[in-house]
Length: 236
Ligand code: DX5
Ligand code: ZN
Image 1 (cartoon, rainbow, N blue to C red):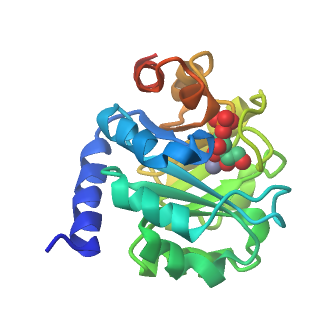
Image 2 (image 1 turned 90 degrees about the vertical axis):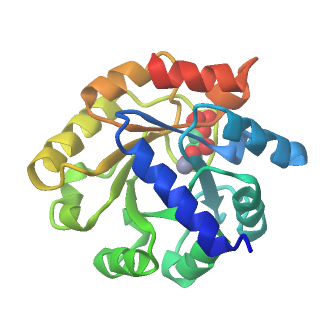
Image 3 (image 1 turned 60 degrees about the vertical axis):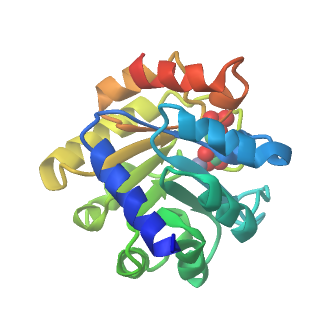
């Protein structure tokens, strides 16, 4: 029987394979067509994308509400690629297990929403997920100095979280350089992810600065050929 455990195992193998690539593309389904979500996820399955980015917004931590468990479960059901779940919610600890059960391969929480970040990160790892921490544009990378060795992933927000289709904040390059320097010193296998306003004009410079995972919502799903845009982002 093809169980959820088997699927998670196969997806983790795929993640290990893609770890050898220096640039991973994680299209955000926030910009997908929810009336045709299965179709859009099957398009991603056929594309050069590596992860599927799942944006969860609660209307409290950010001024918008996106979707929750049912959409995450459906995404997991149809995706052959690992789900990269980004929690833009307060009190994420209450929901970690439910997102793991919904199919999350990685779970990223916001440092600004976690007063006991070390405990939250350990809880994510105990569930068997990759543990990520996201920083809002105003939050300095130095806040991660005492937890960097515990992390699998750092997500640098390059827009203020809450909406797709916003303009990329230029100070992101400095923050990527800062986290890359910290990672080189203390955690060289860290995934450095950039989220917000990523497109074909900034992806190469971000990669050269040290980022290796790129979330892309509107640049992918509003392109004439989303699949071609994913290839462009991967190789630009
Ligand atoms: C924003 C989300 C992003 C969003 C990115 O709060 O975290 O993942 O989907 O969308 P684009 O690529 O359109 O900026
Ligand atoms: Zn996101």
